[in-house]
Image (cartoon, rainbow, N blue to C red; front, side, top):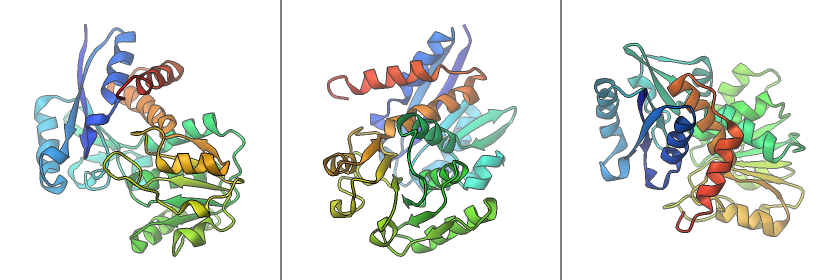
Length: 285
């Protein structure tokens, strides 16, 4: 039986369901895959640890690594090459060994699109507010513009980062449809939907990324965080009457893409999604 070594590097990864998802899908293909969680919270500063980790991945024979917050952009200088999509997004969530080279890919954008179309097929994309201009936010910006969003307003605590993302998107898409917003209240005024792509709401980062009073029943809300699956934002959105897409949809979508990059095989999206939903329903999940 072929053996494959993969893993996930980032902060607060111990609650990740990626090992169970990747290893079970591999078993369904007759493969033996070990998926190692590498939690940078236990190792000190990510900036200090990440270069050593990438070197170790080369030496230890990893087929690839998923990369999550806060490493999606800082990992780029450590790699030998980037896929076209990762270069356009400016972030990497999957590192793959190709011969003696490590190449960065991004399956977040395609994963978000897969989950978004599945959960909210009739969503209005006239005016979309994006919360967060980091790695996940960059991927979602690229993806929602590819889906045809007419206007994308980007909010980030670092206004320069939001402006840089808008500028990068406008270089890749016609019509100058992306712009940095001064704050969330301005961005959400008249918005048809919200993409939440900050760490706020995840385990260890409690709270709401925007005040509940800014939500309107006519809005849809797409969450990126999936631990917990029902974030404070999604609970507030449900109270308001918004249509929602939980972060599990994007998580499964990006995992499907990562599985193909690690193994060269096509994952079964429906099977992986059913497995994910079963896992999150378990006590203590």
